[in-house]
Image (cartoon, rainbow, N blue to C red):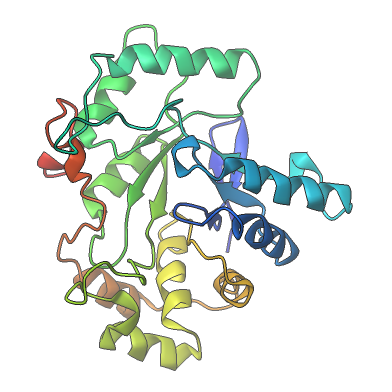
Length: 275
């Protein structure tokens, strides 16, 4: 089983990465160091997570110790130099920037050698097509990062992206263990997922990560607990059967954790489309 996905000719990305969204400053540097020690070589970050400085400190420390070299690591960040501005009601104040202009600016980063590859996040099919059909396109998106787990399987969007040579990264691959409301469904407690996990002598989290990896989808589970970080990495030593994969896909209920409600008024709000 491959442990990497290719990003065009330019780069390859590990199929398992450490997510850092909601990882509190003060804990994230230690989490990154534990992850590097556990074999992680892919880190998913963003300016808006407000913890990139600590992620960098954790990486720097491990480079200093000689555990890894910078070129061994795949570090993802997101465009957006400011936190989303909001109005008095907490709704985002949209800018009029066209995504095609933003894409051209990102292409310049590739040409300047500042990044290995560029991608998109939360783009639906129509938005992705707009970039692919852009006149004078220099670099097509290498990746689309979307929410994905058995309650939101995203089959149509993943098939579409992969058919165009765009890899897919699943965020929230474990659902939301720290759920905001007690009535929210918890994937890790789903009886069918627990049953599959027991058969393989694995945890429900490991099954959920393996589910993505077998679809050639990159998974970026978030954790700051060293024991869980190690546990989440042990997903390359077993395989789910066709029937188990079908069972997991059958759990789809189009339930979205990150609805980005504050952006519903944005002309580019992506989730009104079927996919």
